[in-house]
Amino acid sequence: MQTNQLGELALELKPGHYKLDVSFDHFRHFTAELGVPEYGNQALAASSQPQTVTVVLQLPPAGDWQCGPLPNCDPYPSIRFSLRPYHEDANLSLPDFGALPHKVISYYDAHTDTAGMYSGVPLSDLLAKYGVPLGKDLRGKALALYVVAAGSDNYKAVLSLAEIDPAFHPGDVIVADVMNGKPLDAASGPFKLVVTEDKRPARSVHNLVSLELRSAD
Image (cartoon, rainbow, N blue to C red; front, side, top):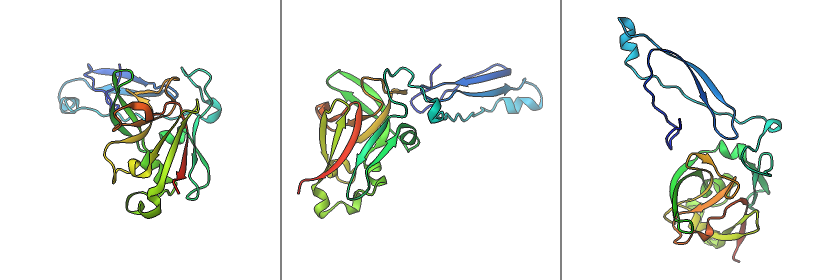
């Protein structure tokens, strides 16, 4: 059984004892014991109420990381950030990226004529994490700044900060690591830049490895 896009699953179970086993690529298995009480007397009221089980999936230690279905992948792949003068060069690993608040968006790929649900971190949130001026601070000379997104094949695309900032521009620009509830495959991931407002998907860089801040000055 698979959860919905929000990670939820509802079941109607007969009275008895059950073992819940949850798995997701690259994460440790989660197990829990469940008990559904017998109907009758005091147990009737309790059994008529739904039970909620919160599932928390944890990443394994770095030494135990398994690439799973991704061939020839690096342990704990990361994105390289070059955002001077606002921050020293930094790497954001897949586990750390996965711990950040995610947003789910719908995206249609005109090249493949397919639509999917992507989960990822807004690029504006990632840049703000490293002190890049956005929102009320995006003005003056900062409007000449742009980001170069590069894939592992050295394919590159450019977005201005104004296009990335939701206060300036509609649509979503996210760095995704999940599509339709599953980690991105080797052809797209483990990271992919997704730009929803473009009429052509040419700036949705797959196999994203670096984000570099530059100035038009």
